[in-house]
Length: 84
Length: 239
Image (tube, rainbow over all chains, first blue to last red; front, side, top):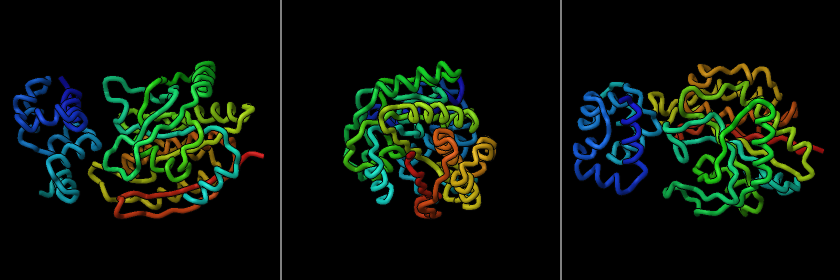
């Protein structure tokens, strides 16, 4: 599939409490329910924010997802700019 | 904001058209249109539990919404429409300050300012013109609020950077009702001022609706803690 499925997964985690719980319970099992490419799956499971962004995940989907991971604003911006 | 609220009360406005932006609140990439007109009997918002605004119900105006959709179709612009929409911060923050009693019905018009390609500024101007004509010809007093912007890049690589030069240029064109300059803002121009600057497409539509009426910049500030250029404009009511 495309980055579409990845963004759908992230938006589901952001917006639907049951999906969010399922993701944090087992990210790998949760990801298996979406048609991700291997690169997408690796970036997601490795919490590689820069890679997710460079693949084309929208900032207003990615940033709420990283907030769920308790990432601060400066950490997030550093990750996107490759400064970390 | 208080001066705008007083202005709204003094204007005798019966109903409001809200030109506003989508933030993944109602739509996703499974179906993304350029514009969506709300035809619901009522709306709720805000969706954000962290926003310090009580969740409210706001009455809709389905008759006016239908007139906007039908007139647009007749004029060669086909917005999508929805009988169910939720309001997010982009709509609820200005509305709660400008119309705190929520005592007038509203018609939301959502702009796709998120997913490429966003509608062109010229197209937004055309949509605004037909809304303005409906307002002019209505026996009721119809108010217009455009919300969104100014320069900001939320969640993106330039998060935190505010382009005040862009903001001042844009506000000056709005104040002068300079439709050609506004229509000339390209996607690249908006993108350079941050992903959130596309929300200004609703302001361009407002200029179309006002048909050459000039306005004043009530306030502008590059608000660093909010990582956003924040501006407020007011336009006089029609005689």
